[in-house]
Length: 209
Image (cartoon, rainbow, N blue to C red; front, side, top):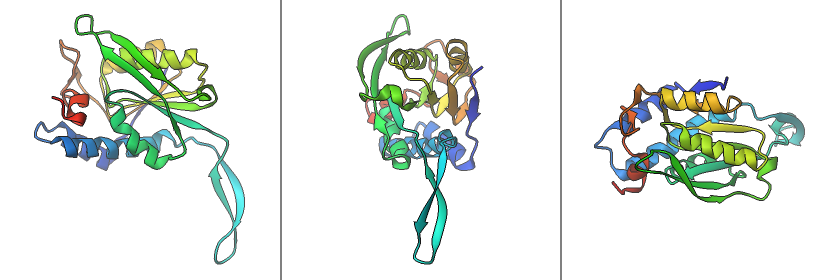
């Protein structure tokens, strides 16, 4: 069963509340997405391995720790996932970025892939997929499957708001993938939007509503 990590830090919860407000404008919404992404990424990278090194401070020789031997990549699901990239790369600036483009068929509500571009060494990297909303989970599961086909062994999924249906979908189809989210909302509506959610995150990030 995939581990579920709900990041209940007060700042995360406060900023998600600001995101929800229908009166929050595009600029502020985009900034909130980036800030929350940084907080959640902090927890999603907690298991990065460390090694001890020796260096000289202005005062004395110190034995201290740095990240060891783990190469990381972030893969936003286009287009809304792009809103999370700035926040996560502020924490891990050396990470490479892959992209996977999926859109939801308006009739079937299933994802359709239209673009994929990954670093050449993606199979050698730990990957964190980022998308603000985990609704049905179909896009998340397709992105995970695509990465596994490319040989990626260690995958995490990171979002801001999730639904029970989306979490169950990942757990059923990819039980090895850990999920990091800020909050689990009540359900999906008939249009497969998260309730209460934030509406269409992509439209609100890019001002296209």
